[in-house]
Image (cartoon, rainbow, N blue to C red; front, side, top):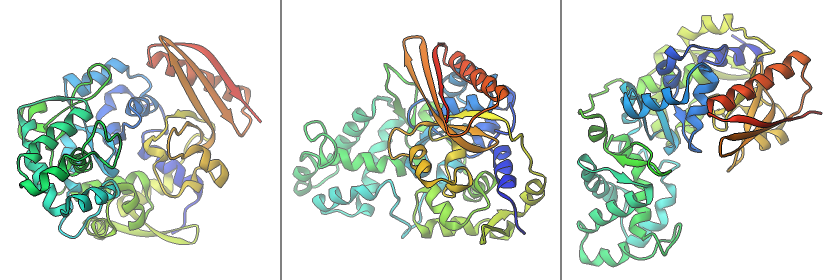
Length: 397
């Protein structure tokens, strides 16, 4: 079976809840489609605004901090992500590696610290996990304070010959503020998160707080026997057709771990041809892909790191490689202007007090109706951020 680029984009738009404006009542399905990266901070809010334009910022914060139907924790690729609390098994415990399945992309940097300590990853992780038990009764303000606290807890478990090395100035970050032990802990917080030992709490004074799942929610997490299968299903539904290499990159895990997870849905897959290459899709999604159609004129202002942009086959959204580099940057990525699922430009916003300045740079001209639609999106986004649109500018070819 072969599918056109338009069909693939239309299918993914629908899977990501971007093919039309959905009601705020679908908050949990929209957040749980494949999770929402929250880096930079606030990215998850922008992502949900694009899917549920009728939702208010207060409603999102209530779901995360008061009702706690949403949860934030380090998840796929080690990024802070927001997802339904009831699916913590899918977005956390499914990522626990089995023996021989390391390293993860987000722990490779720990090598220098391990060499300095003359310890292995498998020796150190249990010590950090033991230290993290303190979060069962404690909430810590700021990531730096969390690193420092857990490093102190690990230090109490180390033999004297390791202690001096553990407390030496860090080779990462600021050596005057971080020890080697603090740096090592920072890398290992991700796997601790997968065990639901550390989650994000309410932001205070501009910084997140951290505690355990049980301390934050008030109950012990339930087992999730099919979490790995559910995670791969979500990935394929939102980013398929795909391969195990695509899954590896999305998770930030080792090829061996991705291959094991892939096998959990092997009997549900159907091969399809995309650009002459064989990829795989959930067989249950084939009818929807055949029917996939979307409004080619629909315009969206997607934030940087929106889940829809989180894919390896970037040419599907933007064929020009030079322009790809302006959208997917290592740091400070802009937002993407979408039309019919294609990227036709970038946008940035600056907030000062209660005013927003929004600038879009387009590579394709818009019709008069398109210009009005984009301006309305900008106005709505400013209102969502509880600001007035102080300045709005569009650069066109």
